[in-house]
Amino acid sequence: MKWSDLTKRQRTLAIGGAAVLALALIGGAFALGRTSNSDARGVGEGTRTAEPTGTAEATTFPGPAGEPEAQASVAPAAPTVTGPPGSEPGPSNPTGGRVFGQLKGIRDESGGGWSSLWVDVDTAVFLSGNAALSWLTETGNADFYNANYWYARNDDSVITSYRFRPDALPLIWMYTWPERPAPGFYGPGMDKQVITFGLFYDRIYMYADEARLLDRYYWFTLEGDRVTIIEEQPRDSYYEP
Image (cartoon, rainbow, N blue to C red; front, side):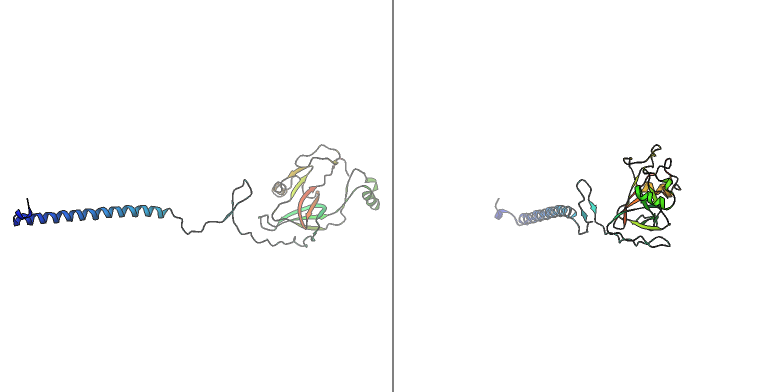
């Protein structure tokens, strides 16, 4: 049917229907566009949540091979070290060496932190051989001389104090404790027992020095003016005077 054959009423209805259809198509297209934009925003938001933030992370430095990474830290200030009560600290010994004497005590000047430890030594002179015989003769004790013994010339009680390194506790080398050899001369080749400093310290101060580790004679190895090794000088009281 031609447009010219339609009546005026039919033409009006056709135009209205076309307008309604056009509006419907436009509305559907708009709705579809909103849905697509919403989906696109959803994907974009999900991507943004995975992006790193500007928060600073802890700096780490790789440790030695096979060890976990260590978190960076600022080294604490060196502790202030004081001498023993009533006396001056031991003299600086830049060349190191060894000191011989009786162990009179170990003091913690850091209040339990073990960062400022001092050892008090009643220094003596180690004598053996002809030097020992000469000294015993001078003191009228030549009858006590034995070439297999050693003697400590400790005329006066003079306490000298030395520090431990704050970054490393000293090694403890013992020959008669915790395992005590059978009676007999303690000569060269004795088995050395390496004791931790913590055990040594606790046995003196937590167990009332039941092993009588104080007042024994030791060699104190120095690195500069710091003690790095405390080594027992064994004495066999069964045979020696």
